[in-house]
Each structure stands twice: as C-alpha cells, then as structure tokens.
Amino acid sequence: MIGIISNADDEGRLVGEAAWVRSQVFPYDEVSLDDMADDLCKLQADGTIIQYEVDGDCYIQLVNWGKYQYINRPKPSLLPSPPGFIESRPTDVNTSRPESRPENVDHSRPMEKNRIEKKRKVKEADPSLAKNAREVFDKWKEITHKTKAKWTNGKKERLVARLREGWSVEDLVMAAESAWANPWNQGENPTGKKYLEIDNIYRNSEKVEYHIENHGKRKAPADDKAASQARALAEKNRKLREGAKA
Image (spheres, rainbow, N blue to C red):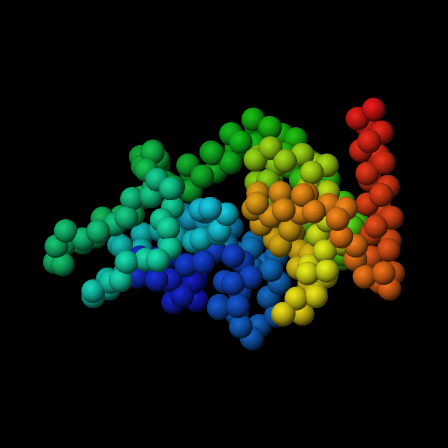
C-alpha cells in the first residue's frame, strides 16, 4: 500500500495496469501479474482504492486521499477522475478535509458492505458469468499452452468484465487464438516480451475487438511447434463453432 501511495499524483491517482503497478512497487521482486492483480482487487474490496477505466485505459484512485494527505500547492492530475467521484477539497487550511466519496452511495453503511452487496446482486442477476469466464480461461490455457496457470480472482474479474460488455465465450476464445498467432504478442516487438496473459489479451473491450478483427489474418512462426498446434486447435474450434451455428 505504501508503494501505491508513493506513486500517486497530487490528487491520489495513478496508472492502474497491474504490470505498471508491479514495475513501480516491486521492481526487484518476483511478483506475478496475477498476484499483483489480486492484491489490487483486495484493496478495492476493502474500500482503499477504486479501479476504473476511461477510454480503455486503467487507473487507480486512492479513496480518502484528501482526508489523510495534505499537499502544499498541489498540481492538477493529468489522469481522469473516476466517473461519479467527488474530489475532497479543503475549504480552509485549518479545517479537516471531508472524506472523498463516490456519488450515489448509501453512506449510512460502510463502503465495503455496499461493494459486497453490489457484487452479490450482480452474481444473482447472472450466475452463468463465472462459469463462462472459467470456460474462457480453460480455452485460453489450451491455446497458449499455459498449463500451470492458476484460476485467480484477478483473471476471473477481467474475463467477467468482458462478458458483461456483451462478448460471448466464442468471441473471447477467438481473441486468444488471434493473439497467439500475432508475432507481436509472441515476442517480436521492441521489448522481446510475450504478451499472451489474460491481462494482455482481455485488458479492455478495444483489445478484444482488435484481436477478433485480425483473427485468421496472421500466422505464428512456422518453425514453432506450439504455434502449429495452436493453429490446428484454432481450426478445430472454428469448425465446432460453425457446426453449432448450423
């Protein structure tokens, strides 16, 4: 938590991508993206931070920043504020700052209780979301050969978020197939790193749309045995999808 506070701007905001947060908070420690994403979800669950997206980019807002931090001559944040979030502004330097609160929240109860109730209502409204997210995860493991990948809350929330936006299981599986066949995602990029994690492929709706639009237009390196297997699997899934529609 201290690392997040120290990387926040004068209005308590910072970039919310798990990979970026990990690079700033744990630059020399072996912390996985999944563990980092889970830690951020726990901080949000207890009302410490708000994770949100604006124009497809992820951000973090520290709740009650204005209550506990006083900055002389603060600079305006270059990052967008969370939708419906009321900034805490002191009216007098000698008075205490009001607590920062999101709008339209019942403050007669603790924030965490509101969050838990909201999650419970969403779950009751569509109990199939978690099941479908797990199905996508299992397909993603098969496509990317990440057999040791674990099913975590971070992965679940990322996939459920995309499903709530209207993407189907078939759409998300297709996005994974396309990402696997993309040389850039395979490491042919300036960093030399592979971008095949759940957080990479399903970061936001725009990413999913991009991969689906390019499905079948690219081929992974021909000398990569795993890539050949992935293409065969993609073709198998395509035929299954076509058979289901027939």
